[in-house]
Length: 312
Image 1 (cartoon, rainbow, N blue to C red):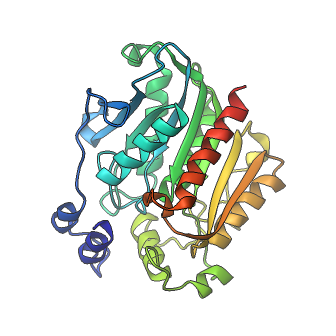
Image 2: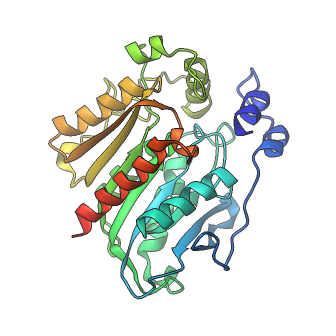
């Protein structure tokens, strides 16, 4: 359904027909009654930006401390929202399988809001929860000292850049201990082997990624912009000097972004950072949206293991 909405709502002039997209992007309401063992509610950060987050809480084991995952949804910076059914289902499943509390961020979308709006929104949510006055209604067992930043596709890109901002800023109450980048949306001017081999891949084509970068990046920028090519020739963030958290990078062998994701992992290692590569050779882009796939179940176990390793 979502794929059809993205296809039919995309205009050649770089704009999106939101009316058409909303016909396909079905929404889920928050529920204080447990659904599949998880309760949810929304918290507004800035109503003028429609900036809010959806909190996912395991309905059982309320007496045990829970790590926190701040999650950024995918959609090429241009599509979906925290209350999209696909995003709601994914975060609900992640909450259930890992036992973590999830904050799913609703950030502004391009092309109406270009770079760096999404990064600013993501970081503002971190600063919001870093203020104790804003977390009084959180369950007492949410452990802000065991915080992970995570995201899929464009959300994985967002997770990286928000983490860099957080490392430079210095949060008081929130301690970032892990980054989970699931098939992160990175790129560059160069055409890589995986892009050439999978130019018309299902779910995400190279033509589609080019369109998304054009709608997101500042006017006149190319794909070597540091938002896109984080370790490229125009990179401005030297993460060697930062206390960057341990990072899990998830890649799929049938994803045209595969090579850029591998370069991201290798870039982290070259900078002396703790990084782990999880590879599923037969996985296409956004495979985790199909919970019936064995790779989806494996991913949830890998995320659970990664979290468990870092909170010991």
